[in-house]
Length: 400
Image 1 (cartoon, rainbow, N blue to C red):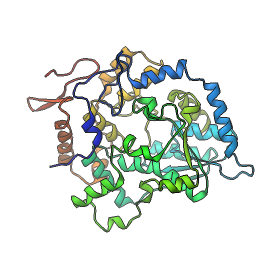
Image 2: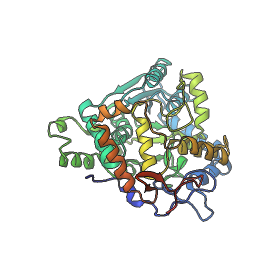
Image 3: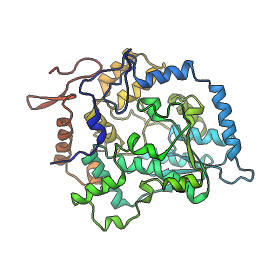
Image 4: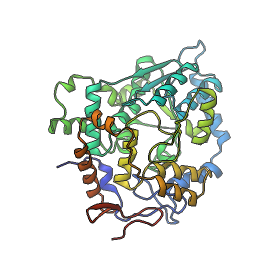
């Protein structure tokens, strides 16, 4: 009925093993757990606390920015920013602590939440020039459906643009320096390919961010299943993919992670953005987790995390709790309790809007969910016609 093209699903370990320090398992794509039972993200946290010379890295940042800083007030760097706590923190620090002149850009959410829109406006009104880009609505919705159905992630076209759009703006405006927030691969558990590097190449994106699939792969399966038409493809797809590597090299464009130069602590980013860019939290916690300040912008965001729970047994609460353990804000026992309470909670608040947005019925939605459970036998088991998770960090799953 469905064809899964998410290549990272095929690479999952058949046996579920949890990190002994945090609450992440080896089902997270590209994560490694060493012989001591500790995941790569926790090992990196130890490097952050005890090995990395942050003073030296700050000097590296000064040297980098000195090479690029404009003397006439013209733009000298690009900062992709939604107005969220992390990207707002980066843009504000670059401008006010390092005397840079950032042009901020925003690849719009699929469906803005009220708080997301408020934070975006507050951010740009705190003193930033900004370009807000909305992709073609019909094409974008269809790509989101294709991501959900065939990759198990409705967010995939957003991720394409979030990574690629900045490079196009850099080329158009001759601004060779791009700053993103954190390297999620090393901070939260993934490939350590770039662990000692301040930047990455677009050559890494398909493997590390795009589930092993390019926009061309998504388009092809859309055409095969008659979800996309040739008329849809008259729209420009350029911003869903990076410029060619030769164009990037010719203009000497590089993206850097701010987290390489300054110790990355999301909670501190929250306090900083609240004080300096008008960032506000939700009044209630986000569905699937206990926090009020993460991933606030998009009404479809909850389904991105819910599908991670379906495919990998790791939901939004697991992700939040794991990095708060590493930052020593909570204990592992506290994290396990939070995961047990919130992980895998169904995102009901915007469910009807999500179905309407991607153009499917409720019945078809749950057929897709069941299919991804069938593709994950190490995680799910059907008992008396009810799906039960086989393993979780609290050891309360259903055994084989």
